[in-house]
Image 1 (cartoon, rainbow, N blue to C red):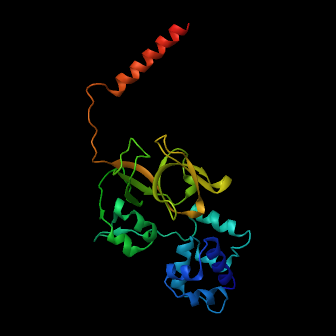
Image 2 (cartoon, rainbow, N blue to C red; image 1 turned 45 degrees about the horizontal axis):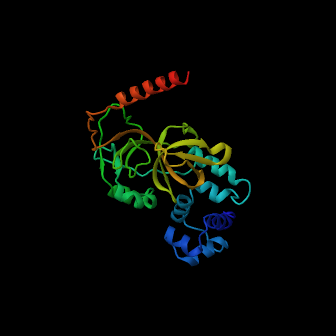
Length: 261
């Protein structure tokens, strides 16, 4: 238990938090944080769990590892692989079958803070989806997206996702829902640079948006996109289809190449 105080102080400072801010986030008073950091008191198990959730580390690492030294790399690696404490809150029906939770646009901000809170998750809409493509032994969630960065998937569409525990299994160029403190909920194509730089690259399908990176340590959850539901039905353009437009461009290119010769 000798490392707890220094670990809490180290983790708090890496997040740029005051003792008062940390205390509010884990539900204790500021004086208790001071006593933990100075090893004048040891946190109860429930408080240890809250601290571990908040900083995305395991209770074992919080107690046994000096996180302020190079040993913190091990803790980060375990977190990326999902080997330490990372609990997913779910809702089940009367037969103890897991239901699919839906996170609508208006709940996006709240989900960033309440993603690990069972009471919050239970308040969100949830339902069963009897599709053969969805396995009974996996956890699924549906996120409603906003904006045009991933068009042709329209704003307001619902992305059906499977929970991804091991972030080393991110496949470059595949689409995922990513939840983090600063970004909130985003739907992007991801590129895995965790082992090289500790970062994940996020890229939009809409070329007007530039790719950017986020540190893996700042990510709460990652969900692999499987499909989507949209109520924005496409309309037929009888004047000029995409196929006809493509054919016209090919013909124009041939004509231009011929004139050049």
